[in-house]
Length: 289
DNA sequence: AGGCATGTTACAGG
DNA sequence: ACCTGTAACATGCC
Image (cartoon, rainbow, N blue to C red; front, top):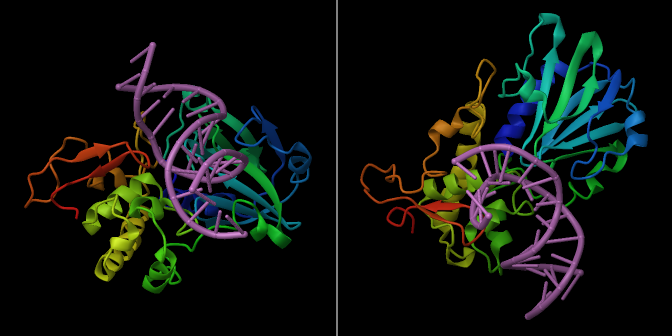
């Protein structure tokens, strides 16, 4: 589930819970994530305090004391659970509910914190990972060094957009999902943004008019912000529900709506799904040009 | 059974 | 060296 809004929601919900807590112990149930967890480095974080959490693109950076950063990526199915035993009830750090055994089937790493509290890294598909970086040069890290600007910051603007696409022979949807262009947009939000912008996903970037670039930027910012406000999107995860779940999926215009009628009231077209390029692509022939 | 799924990276070819 | 597209990773669900 995690694109920028979901990761931002995780960061916000987790910050007030784990900030200033000490990592007392770590238990690994499965270290074969996307990268095998470095146990030597893992040993060194015992006793360290979580100073703050930051988000960069879809990555979470846990700043620990002693100049160590724990870099976490959720991949496709990674989740972080925060559990407060004191309340005798499992609590989520995110918008997933974990109140039964089944939810713990894919726990991979458990961080034991003060006062019987735990932070759990859970990941069905194991596309996510946990790495430890040195604070001094963490920006040179493989995963962070080539990231484009944050879409919600001022540096991501029309001048940058125009400059980046100059001389490029790619379609707009691929560019939006290209983390070197802008960081944090994935397949779901790329579909939503282009529908709202009334731009066909497979338009080559050199055919886009200035006015269209402006509209795309506008919707990139507004869609991501709105999703954060709604707690991100929780799709395929409706099992139980006394924890906080995101609800932005209820506001999807087009993602996952194959064969449904276009949400534009002045249009009775059907939403098309294509998988012939860049993952599942949804669009309306009538509304998007 | 086969296809599909929210992501990233290594690699091949131009 | 840069640009682009594709395969691969692991697992569950429809």
